[in-house]
Image 1: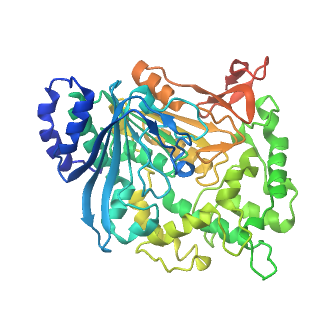
Image 2 (image 1 turned 90 degrees about the horizontal axis):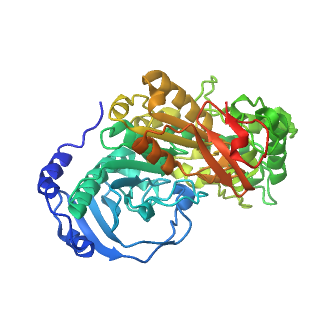
Image 3 (image 1 turned 60 degrees about the vertical axis):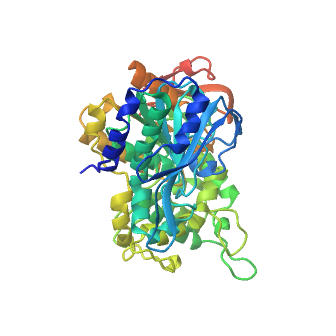
Length: 529
């Protein structure tokens, strides 16, 4: 059953009826300031100020895929507040904090900007394309009202797992609460409701985007989910699997400590990437460093020419986490050219030359698994002893509320909603193979899925950008043209710093960009087949 926004939404709806008929504000700056004193159920507005200066870079961009640049804004109103402030079961303060930016020259649209990691921070609400290598114009600069939030807890750590409601807020309820409040404030600012509402995010923000379509299908007209951690509970288990497999072969330092980062050297990863390229690159008609025909690539760990021990560890990781009977716990991974890139190493192996690993899979994944994904929270659990038969079931309760795995999007489709999913084939955090499996199942379970959904797989791209890839993309324009002009996207023109002065089409799955002749640097030399 889909969760409903009532009675909270109903209260706000009744409170906002008069605003529908209100005259448009003659002075946007004055109207902005009045929002500070607006009364909204269970919500405190802490700030309502006019701004036309710089917007700071997203300091958590490695998790959100947001902009790493300082942005020069056009005049707009900045509203900040907190919904549902309370003291949790652990005696700590909780509530969902948000930031809403309302441009003077509003285009009539609303965009919800997803978070990242385990949330716990409010990123600048600018609506940057959630692929950090994108140079496309952010949503705020296009005239959208943009909101961001912290997911219901105040710090980017998973300790909130000690509180039941905080778990629910992070899983999906904060999205519903912020959506209602943001739309109410938009109506108060402009005297009219937004004519269309979009959600856009990467990583956990991509999971939140998929949750928006699955749990709040009547609230959003379009969703962009990039590299979504939609099966987050199982991915957390998979990170422990990766850690254990690589630690089996990790060499020791002079003190006898195993060094995770050295389980595979950079030379090893370069060797893997080159071997994948040599075996599969030309299958799309052109040997150019990009494996567009990634799904037909039959590369195996043995093809890389590593030592037997390293080959076995790599194979175990790439085959995906399994229990002792060989049953799949989490999906396997595609071999791709981006496996030797810094982002892949950062998540899988790290660079620490001490006994304390610094891979993101350990530093972020370990705490998340013990504090949040395991029920009850088990912060003192020794993850080096994680047993995949005994301990994986401890994640099932959280997975039931957190994982955006539903394939029933019938209501979202019926209201005209559009879904665009983007994933890097070389994502080291959330398996691209798992994303493809979900998309196939959703197409099987939801009639006419192609009328409202598209999957774009970017070869060589790591998590939320990076990699050796055509990773400068603009899915927001695709969504605008699809929802607003009924122009269904069959390809997305991309470029990337790894391939200067060249463009490539990223084709809607299952088609791939195939070279047909002519100038290799031009997108029209490729067809989607």
